[in-house]
Length: 381
Image (cartoon, rainbow, N blue to C red):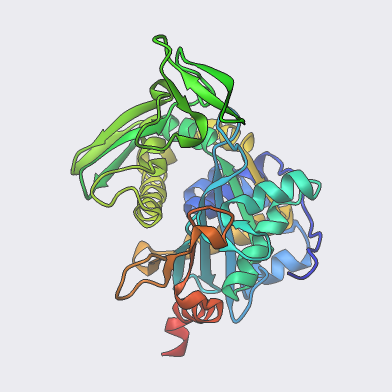
């Protein structure tokens, strides 16, 4: 992987934060006017000229690519691991939008880790360069330049959903998830004890219950996990459901759902569904005619966002977002479908014992060419 650069990065001002939220949620001109973003029109020659002509944003072959990421944040195990990674590619006229969901278990050879750790590694090991490393990683793997990055803490998203009165989500498949992690109880021993024992000259840790029965810690799996107080059971039934913020988060983060809903691919599809539902709700008259609600939303997201978009580009994103029509949004979900899937499961012994996803036939070139073909599909016709 080539050396990571250090692009401009800063915390956004009040208006800048919410204008970026406009990009992420594809909000319309009503919000821009209510937030008085017109003041950015005098931000300099670049802004004025680009508003009249092109989008003015960084681009490649007429497309601007933004990496959207969601993390659990404080109170969650692995707070900076990205549960959600979506590459959004928008053409300069906003006539075509592609959302590419990137599975969190996709293997990254240069990091010797899953792709969901790129942001966390950049934050912890490279002095807060999480956005840079995540962008660079996705760009190298998929052969697509990533111009901007946007990371949101799910805690802020939950509050945002509640502020707009919840979301109406169409659940396509009923499913049950018996092992959804309860926040804050990741290390709860559930009344059990962990002791060190020596057996046949080998020292190891065991989990003991009140009766003295012991299970070697190394032999605990999902099937015999004794720490049952760490989990709750989720249940979603098919049909249109109204969900509050907490329920929406559970819907998109569920990893052990029945009926095929426990896969990375099903979760990616649910995440895209929620993003579009949020967009629709924010565009509703109820939200657009409530300045107080908009201000509360901006404050909520302002505390939970990290991005490398400059203030001077805020209005440019708003302008682009205004043009986007839902019918132009194309969705690409990478999966392991035997016939058409582009990924397959890697051998754990070759990937540090982890369950990971790799390109079919381990061909990163084929995967990159597929993604590029999807992004530039309409241009080539």
